[in-house]
Image (cartoon, rainbow, N blue to C red; front, side, top):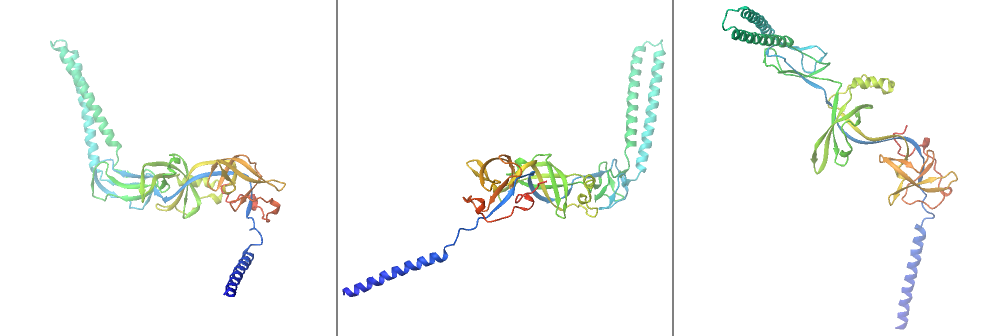
Length: 395
């Protein structure tokens, strides 16, 4: 019995030993020979321009349209345009039958003539009363005749004004500027009143676009801010614009709060003239036509600074409200340096103190700063042309 127990204990001890040996071998096999290679990049601190933008997308809409109305009532004699026609300033859009207008002018001219005669008669009667010295009621008659003269003068003024106003109106509706007709509302033979809309004219060079701005960003948007607008169909062309209206009420969809912002694009003619002075590469293509409904990307310029020192955001660490960077010294050592920062576009950050242009900063790929010196790091070339990784907007 004792021999059997000893045999069982020996087997257990052997199994434990074998497990220990197996575990040791597994650890030896999978244990790395060395620590993983350090991953980093080196960037040169340099001056550049930093712009903070709020972007959105929308569709172009014509911003300069005008309803062309009849200045007088009458019968439409003819309509000379159709929807979609291009017109020039001063071109006749529609005209009324002038026979009624001409009859009205004749009647007003007769009214004016009669008013002049009435005034002349009133003045003649006053002169006669003033010269008459035999009447016992001379004072009363003079007062009455003077009042009649004043009344005749007032009626003459009214007649002159009525004729002047009738003469200034036109039976024709003309285009006040170059553009194209978007809508025609009347036809020949229609009876119209004064103020009836004959057609709608649009300026093809003036556009606006509405975009939605989140509740987190709307406080940074103000009327008059500069905007850059880029059409998806013409990505090389940037159109200057400005914010013209901010909706006071929110648009809420699926719990997301946004505010509508209206942006007006500068006249395309003015843009073309400005950009052509900058050379052929910047000129608006003569073959490309901006049209209503085109999709555009809008960038509202919230803040911008020129000629400031920039470092990539990934090179900056923050602890207890203090910002640091790792600076590579000429002797090959690294220095953890305190810096002061300014604005950021979430890719690069402005440095206001603590760094000088031309210094090298180290951008580590991991979260921990290595304790080794740069001479022990794996060789990695500097970024091309000394550019900071992710840098944009640098001139």
